[in-house]
Length: 382
Image (cartoon, rainbow, N blue to C red; front, side, top):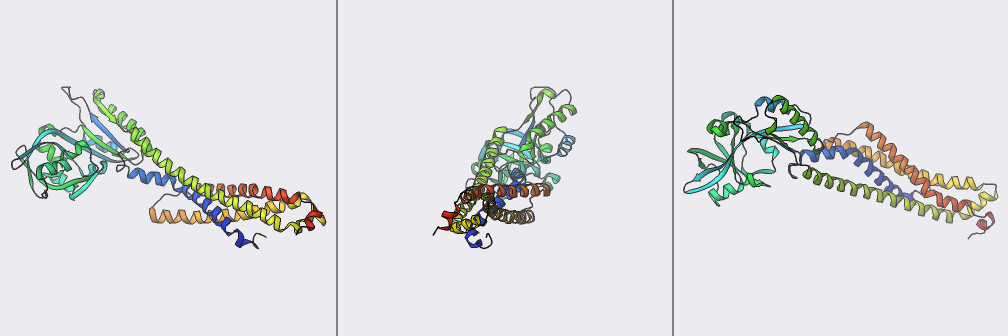
C-alpha cells in the first residue's frame, strides 16, 4: 500500500528525510565547525588568545622570556602560534614638523595571526624582515592619520630617536587602543636598536580551539614556573573567559536553531504521515470491514496500519541517512571537515531508530481507529 500510494506520501518522505539527514550531518560536522571557528576566532574578539607577561617591573632583577621558552610552548598541544613582543610606550615619532607620541613594538610575522587587525595598505612585517633586521614599520591607523594626514605613507620615513623607519604598511580592520597608536617594527631591529626593548617580557599565544584555552594557560604557567625559579611572582598568564563564553553562546544558539529547524521539519513530516494514515483508514473502511468479516482480528488490522506507517517513515529515514552520508563525504572533500566514521554510523542508526518511533507513533491512532470498527457498519460505509 505504501508503494501504491507513493505519490501521496512523497511530501512525508521528503520532510522526514530532510529532517533526519540535517540532524545527522550537523552531529557529524559539529566538532569540525567548532574547530574551524576556533581557528578564526581572532576575528571574533581574540577568544583563543593567551597573553603571557612579566609584570615584575619594580624588581631590580626583572625576569624575561627566552627563545627556549618560545620553542617549548610551540610544542604544547593545541598551540598554533607563539609570538614574542617587545614594546616601549611614549616615544616620539616625527615626520617633518609633525611630532606625536607613539608606542613602538617589535614583532615577528607570527604576531599578525594573534590580533584582529589586518593590512589595509602595503604589507606586514615578514620573516625575511625579521631575519635582516631592516627598520621597516607598519603603522596603526591613528599613527598613519596623525603623521601623514590624507597622504600615502608607504615608502616614506619616520624619525624615531634619531633613527629612520620606512613605512611598508598600514593596519585596518578592528584595532585595539594600543594597536591604533603603535608603530610595529621587526623584533630583531627593535632589540638591536633600542636597549630597553631587548628583554622579551610579553608573549602572545594562539590556541586552535577556545575549549583548550584554560588547559593551555595552566600548562604554560606550570612550565614557566619550573623553568624560571625565583620569578614566579612576576609571571602573569591571562586568557579571556568572557570572550569565550560570548562566542560559545553564539555557536550554541546557532546549533540549537538548526536542530530545532530539523526537528520541526521531521515533526511536520510525522504529522503529515499521521494525517494521511487517518485518511487512508477512512478510504479503506469497507476493506477493513471485509477483512474483519472474513475472520481478521482487531490486532491484525492494527498491526497492518502500524506497519504501513512504520515502512513509510523508515523509508524516509533510510533516504535521509543515505543523503547524510553523501553530505558528510562532500563536506569532508570540499571543506576539509574531519568526519568520524564511528560517530557517523551511530548517528545514522539513531536517526533510523527515531523514524521507527515516529512511524509507530503516527500509525498508532489510525490503527486503533481501524481496529475498533464494527464489521457490519464498515461494510455499509459509502
